[in-house]
Length: 461
Image (cartoon, rainbow, N blue to C red; front, side, top):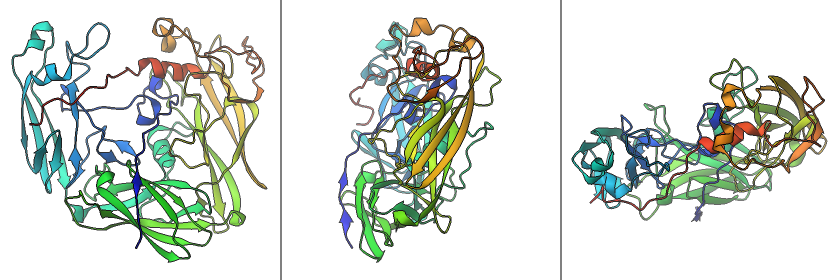
């Protein structure tokens, strides 16, 4: 059976309108940070993958054999961790303030930890006198615990990275989490438009844990077994991402197998991919999604953030990877895609990542309405979207002038005829202020603190 080489992938950040309204996601420029139980220390890692192409940002079980290589830094909220310029004290200075002890199925392989077998692991940090304390740093003892899971007890499945982001971070028009009815579920066949490269993520699960299992895709290889027709072309990347190009009518079973550096020996079946010819696509539905509402507002949801064109074949099965064309029939929205983001081509962003705008900010609370359309040959689908924005001088946006010296410019991706004048707001695409809808994204960029890249420190001997 052919095995596919893996190529490195650098995660791309897309900034949707989430951070300033109470949400934080790796894709929106506000990556969460894994911490010890009381937040004394942070763990920044680029080795473990969890879920659909994400890093280890939340507590999660780890697969036996996995290597965890965290840079350990002081917790942002700990007194004295940051100076007046919001710069963290050096990692080495933090390390000198703790004695650390590992227990459980963990081996020290500097600068990493290797999960040596199933069981419960802990890392205890005991605060000790140090030079940084004399300069105002006030550390306290803390710890972190996690489970290490047997490779024989985990399963794998395919998931669309776009689906994963939308389900965990976006809302429907009623302010509820999006339905997963049209997303891939474990055991589902992943249907892809034939002849197009379509990305799917490999996700590991355990029946006793809600969180996905952390693993090192770099220690694994892909095995492809053609069950109908020719074998597809499959690229496997470091974040556990598969990009599949498959012929119409073909099917293939995909598995992950241990590579030369793996400590375990078990082949894990991931799922089946099937190719669907473009002429067999018979319907198209547009599903729009919204950012969460500002925490201190009475709004049901925030601005529209993106949309998916759900394309189906004659059996009613959702097919990924259709190259649809997007337009805005009423109102105005930024409409764009970034090919470097591992989302299928049927997803589109409707909020500019740099804060650029398609309309002027309202003078008072203002509702906006727009209609978006997706087309694929003779197929088309519409979605009407509505959202309410608050004026910049409201409590939500107070102090923006202090946060940003250079406001973003007009969006170069605006589509649509523009908004009619309403409530004293001249909302048109020809005369726009650089705030408007993009102010949510602008706030996101300002509140997402920059983190210095630091060298690894000798926590692990």
